[in-house]
Image 1 (cartoon, rainbow, N blue to C red):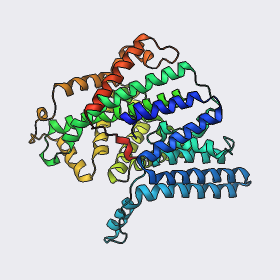
Image 2 (cartoon, rainbow, N blue to C red):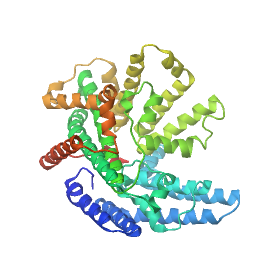
Image 3 (tube, rainbow, N blue to C red):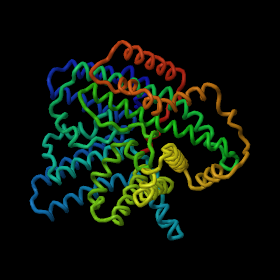
Length: 469
């Protein structure tokens, strides 16, 4: 069930919201949220709800065992076994065929047969959330959760279950047990949900239609202009698609008394690749920093080790996104850029007086990154890269796939992905203002909701990129 579906907006969400706020006692509210979350997940894939419940049970039991075990070595073995179970489940469903194809290619034969395995929606997200709980218990940063229903709610909570933000247990531990949901929080939550819905339905879906049509064409028949145009449209699509969904998730959390971390901070305003990754998918970046980069040594063991750690983290980031060589190379691509900035490029960027050059460099790096991210196969990526770097006339002019409506929404998207908020701080303040919701906010929310509903009713095209992960 998508947040941007009519079933969710007009039936599921109002029903859960009313039940939640009609029940006066705390445990009843948590029960409603847990039941709603399980129903939400089962709506899309009933058979895989068992897998998620197994994940909850496994991590609950490992948390209890870690809390009752003394001694460094036994605790390390327990944690290692827990990591193996969690990553093993994730690896089987997400990476089995990828690894089988890789082994078959390297050995020159069909040593491992491929299997028909459907990827459970959101498995990457809820596995990382479960791991954060167990690792925090191991580190003794938190107390073990002895109530299995609380842990189940944390792992399965529907606002961030299938697409994030990745919520670390220590960030909302207290909120699960005790929280206050004020009228201000509810109003702000509705505002964030409405704006996120507009990003997704009005902007991202419009860009997706054009990007999908263009990038589905044979690469060797595309020209330079239309290849660049398709990737630029995709660059807008993926930002508004994912940041819109994150806005909706944050808004839903507010409606039920939860504070989730921001997942985006206008990444397309960045002046370096390092800054881009501090602003893009912040919850994933901070997860890898806290649970992989720092345990590997971070930047505490010299420049050489720091560069290796950065490269490994971003290779893992690419692999997390998908079981494909293009995702791995995408992660390695960013690893190389970040190592280059750490070694020498960052100093030049900091001292460069022409700051617009920094921004052009960053956005060029990001656009080429999205080209690699979007390509399903390396052969496709090679064709697109050749088109982008050498002039080709091609068979398809841009006007075949773009009209005035698309250009209008592209202009709106370019302005709203950061430049307008940067030029008008008052607008940014209004968007994120929690304490006051005035008549203008209500009018804008109503207009966005109305137009989004019209588009959803009239068009069944409603993809979501991060469902793949």
